Length: 98
Image (cartoon, rainbow, N blue to C red; front, top):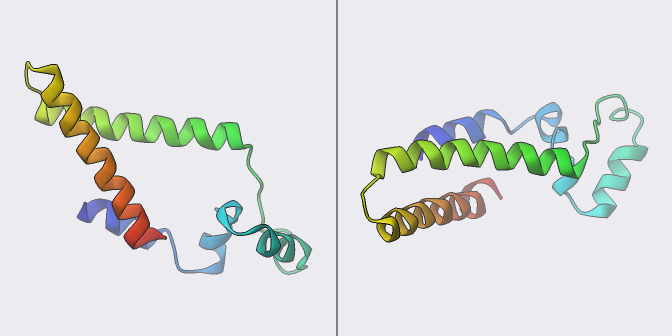
């Protein structure tokens, strides 16, 4: 989790870094950013399907790596452990990133 925290911390903090994912901001803020002349050249809009697929692939790799580390012959044990890891990532996102 500390590696994930460091990666998230390094990816936030400046206007340029925050503008990379401004699509998560409220609509009013997005409109203000798009209408601001200083930010128009820096704003990149991405397709939501592409963003979803990229996030899916990233988490697929992360959970696969953790799954190999905790793998047991019992399917239920593996499923529960990976679910706990996934929810841990969600909780980290809620408390630290958001």
